[in-house]
Image (tube, rainbow, N blue to C red; front, side, top):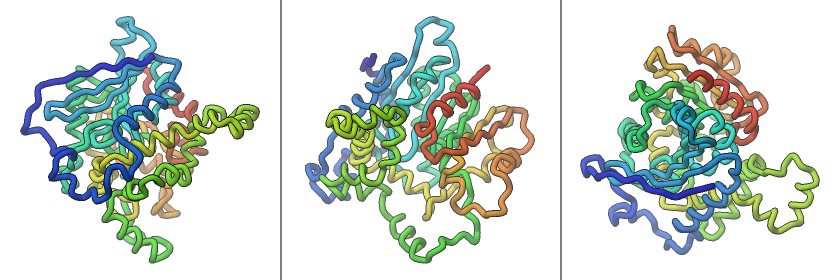
Length: 385
């Protein structure tokens, strides 16, 4: 069951980031809007189709307005309304780069059995407001973190279990660093930006470095928008792995065979990729902020490892990563110590527990690739909080 409501608050102009709907921010969109087969209504429809997959909990979808006038798309998942359940510390889910709330459709129900679950479209992504981020990495980072804090206050949440995947993990860490009193536990799921770039790191082929530095001048998903009517097929061609993770029938041989010949089943299999397309065919915003935070070849300008000791010592921290994830193999020396031990060592002496869980057979999108194991690990990590 899904309902639509809205929460608003009085705007404060001093906190407002410039909107991409203003003329000052539209000069870079050289192609006509109709070149891309998308709009806000198509994105809303694609989100609704994906969220219809969630049948084992109640969903409430809404927009939460921040003091500066920006809106954050929010989905709340619950399985009960009694006071004891609603008083439990909620989990807040932060998605990765180029994603949105719909990517958690395999996680809402199982996680909501224990406590309320919130998922948001990060500022500049999905159906949240598209704003212009400052190019300075530290200021850009602060703009993302401020939006999360203002959202928490607008929702009336005191303390949360903060879970971030990929770029969302990077932002979850930075939020916990700045607002430790609002986080009961920090869970980093295959976070981007954790590892530092080795001083002598060079790609195996020089052309990779040249192309990487060239592409870094553009928004990561600019090609999807430039492709116009070919954008959806481009997503389907190169992100078939994600489609497989969200295929409800992938373990049912008969259903999979039937899906290959049933047009309705084939179309349903594309729902998640259509959602990803519409999330990223809108005017660039969050991905531009990501580019400001990223160094060439996939590393962060402000990596998390050197800042791990700055976390509040009492804060429980959990790292869940994929054993096959490129994030934890790329640029890592062959003789490097075990990641779990290195992670604990970087955190230093602590009073809060630190756990490291490796999903050995999973790649980067571990929350969907093996959602049963991922949900169980998150439930275990949340016990007693």
